[in-house]
Image (cartoon, rainbow, N blue to C red):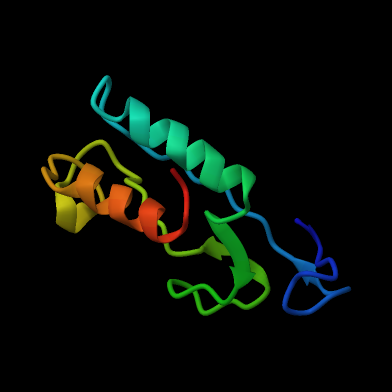
Length: 99
């Protein structure tokens, strides 16, 4: 939780934080992990907005680079197995300019 700064949608307005656990296969996901860390440091993973799940505004939401939030359940359950995930997220990172 915090207060939005000058580079956020509503400066001075409080926002709600979040916690997310994400999963990558080891060792195949190691290179993607390094790129995701760079994307996080560049503030490309999350943004302040309106939750598609809850409809709540002024909260931390995904910014468009997909993550696996479960080790199980397949692609439909945001988990594994998903044979195309590493290539897809690699393309999203490419599009975001993260090498």
